[in-house]
Image (cartoon, rainbow, N blue to C red; front, side):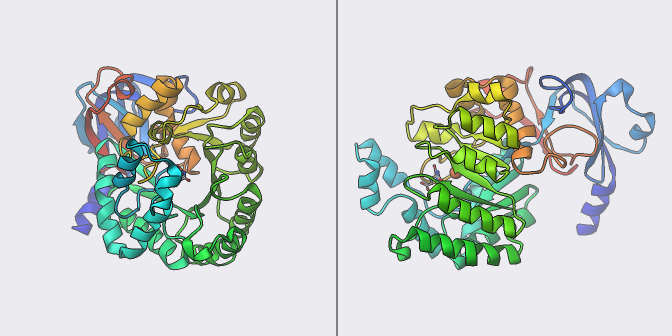
Length: 411
Ligand code: DI6
Ligand code: FE
């Protein structure tokens, strides 16, 4: 089986008679190619462009697919998820619908801490089993790369367990998983209110141990009044930097603590949420090349009314990614297609911004822009083939999945 897969992966694959939205960096808009073709060898794109201009040698001996005029986009990338969790918080949802406040829910044992309790009680294999249906839902809509954060473990063993579960999903399924250590997500009960001591534990024990085992590709934190201060996050980022790990930040979601500027100062790959970010934050992100990851699912679910400053991001040239933020508390969302519709409808992103946000810019937010996210020679052959007439349909429809086929690394 392995030998067979290997030989097929080594072969030459060709998708022809297709319309391409390449999302390529150096074309305008979606980078559309009518009558396009894509050739891939060893899982990598070797040609993407007009079929008529394809080097003739590429067609010979290739396993060829006639796409019958269907659209091909880069495989979708969900660059911000908390996919690995145990149980759910539908009970809190019901309490909130009945009028309970967030504080009342927390007092009744709800909030992040209730997810911590559930995760700590689950084995690594149980976590994998509970996460799989969510991963399957994303993949069914053409997702080929997904970022998964820890952050419901909040001690060394349970953070490691979460990240190992994410690595298992990467190893066993035809999808690329990038892991992020979000140990600085919330204060666990055993910390007894001492945030500084917990940040010490994260910076001096959890991150070094996780890094030594190669379990994390990046480090994230929740910078917020109800979580950690910019000074505390800076200590986490210093530790990440010393370990050579790139950083990201949950920034300015509920208030403006100038998290965007903090992220930019540390050259973060992305700053995420950003509802309360101001112009200085947007300017700093533009200078640093930090991607703004827009998370409309959380905005919608907690009925936030302050919108992220999209106009400022455009004006300053900040690149925007769009992601589900899939988590049990504030965004139980496993559809990147619906997320695009929310980004367009709630925040006014254009179709091009939405599609770039779940492909090219999402890759950038993960530091993977050389590897995936566009249809260009040299990138991984991660493709989504769609039964649509125009790309806008991917953003326009709600709760409908027009995916025809999903190709990960040429397979
Ligand atoms: N921001 C959020 O919206 C989630 N985490 C974060 O940093 C909330 C996660 C949860 O409630 O479980
Ligand atoms: Fe999040």
